[in-house]
Amino acid sequence: MRSVWDPGPLVAQIAELTGAVERIAGRLEAVETRMAAVESMIAATESSLAPLPSRLAQVEAGLERVDSRSTASWWKVVQIQESCRRGDRAHWEQIGDLRAFDRKVYSQNGEDGIVAEIIRRVGVKYPYFVEFGVEAGVECNCARLVLEESWNGLFIEGAPPQYEKLAARYGGHPGIRCVNEYVSSANIEDILARNGVPEDFDLLSIDIDGNDYWVWAAIKRWRPSIVVIEYNAAYPPPQRWVMKENPEHRWNGTNYYGASLASLAALGRRKGYSLVATNPDGVNAFFVRDDLVKDRFVDPAAHWYYSPVGGGHPPGEGPFEKA
Image (cartoon, rainbow, N blue to C red; front, side, top):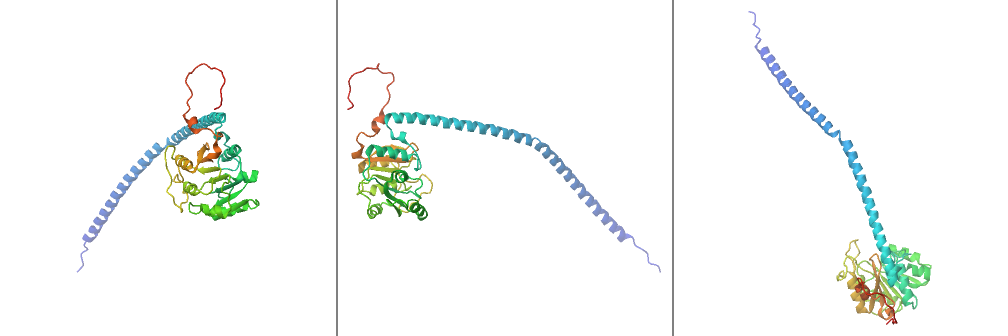
């Protein structure tokens, strides 16, 4: 008996394959739809990006104009400052204010010129200086005195690498001693004594970016004629501000250091010194021992409180005295 072929399984397989093809076709259609949407988005993005080069060019041109205006404004500010400084200098020269003598040779700012003028007014005894916080001694307040006027003196520097450069720089000057020590209120008088510093030497310069006030306060046996000391201009008069003493302090580049001018002026008065000047850059204060001041410097009170009269009387002449 012959077997009968049953097409049912094949029909079922064909139906299954047909369904799979239809599903794939549906997915392909969905992918094509998404691709069309992406292409549309890309086209829209390209369309929106098209103006950007011209816009960027406009922004760059605008920035160039702003930069040009800023540069011009900066130069105007500089010119105004220079004009004011020239006016100030003319006034300082007229009244004998020490700021008029501001001049840099080896000092960090214009201290060289001011120190030279103070020395011219009060004279010298030895001449002898002490300066600490000098680093390699290239830019400091007493370098000119050594290199141009052959002063004797003592340089003190705490950092060993800087001290080595300092000693090498001044090794050919027999009247100069270089000491490698960190200065503090506890050791300053011992350092001065060990190095044979005269008790009434001519010039003391203090710039250690920290305990400056406390070190000067601790110097009692020695009474130099002139003291140059850095002050902290972040605290203008009449503010009294002194950094708390800390022998381990090392300056970190901020405005946490030293003492305000008002605090140093008060300390100077207690020690028998008069504040006679600051440099125009607002860095150092200059003190002179009271017995040497006399009438050699501007009276700060009269200078500060004087106001010119508005209008006034017609000029007259007659005998007068400089009392």
